[in-house]
Image (cartoon, rainbow, N blue to C red):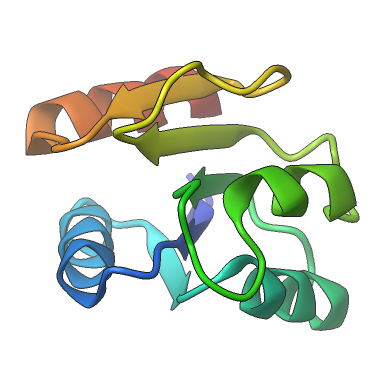
Length: 112
């Protein structure tokens, strides 16, 4: 089975590291960036990931702006946020704080 690639877009360094550690521990290849602008730069220079895990409230370029500007709209996005409502067009939504099992279940659901 091919390794699945996930882009984590989260400005909170603790949450960013936790998401990445959990996903890497399950065999996913993870790239973590801190805002929507870094995510756009990554996507412009690399093949598209299999999934994007996206925070909404970030500096520089927030999650809503990123969703409107992302170059590969076919890539599924899971929003992880404490805000409501869930943005339209996302494959999944996780309410923060996110538990490990909840995260993994939603990632598996959206990748299948």
